[in-house]
Length: 289
Image (spheres, rainbow, N blue to C red):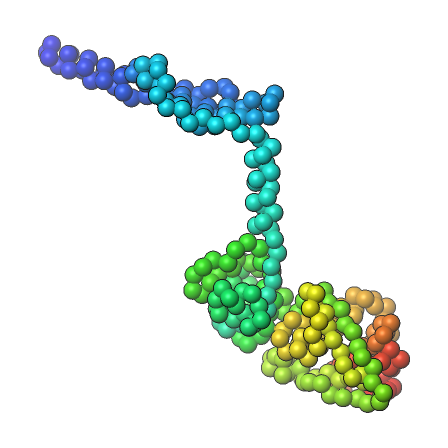
């Protein structure tokens, strides 16, 4: 019996000597782990008057300091670093890609060859983070992917975003070069851009050239349309915003948008004509019918 008591006493003594008990200090979050033989202090000490705090670990054995890794940092410095990290992660990027595969929760796109993202991967999976349920973009459609942060280096590479545009970049500037002749020239058919879209034609009237400036780069309108950087529908969406009170014809709803240097006409006739015209500033629907 005495041997058992002695054994229990020895075990308790060892526990007291070696197993620490945590004590929480009221200095901002520091914790001391105390045993009879040693003390380990995990410092997180706030010094509000100096706008600083101490952080690190100190170890004492029998009251003698044997390890000290305590550093002093300023709160403002940490705030600035976190702010810089958040600002970097929120930098917005965008690129045009063609939909290769899709479900209601993700799509896989191939970035255009002139996009920087093409250097990362020829296929990128876009994870929406939500379920689009009944909506699909359409295989073969060109879309604009807006995202923040880094691209995950898998294959396919991955981006988490639900910011996807189907009508091209919303911000652009259109410039025209008038022609000596007032001719109507067919530029392309909308189904050449997306076989699933409405069938209508784009025409120029009295113009030799139409250029678009997007993201500080100027290209022809045809190039912008074929690359997916913009769409004819996106052109009309912007025109409706620029001219909320544009003239509407009583032919089914055709509209004219008169800018300083050019005019856009969107046909919407009862016979089904949906053609779009870009022409001289004095062009009217009577010139192109």
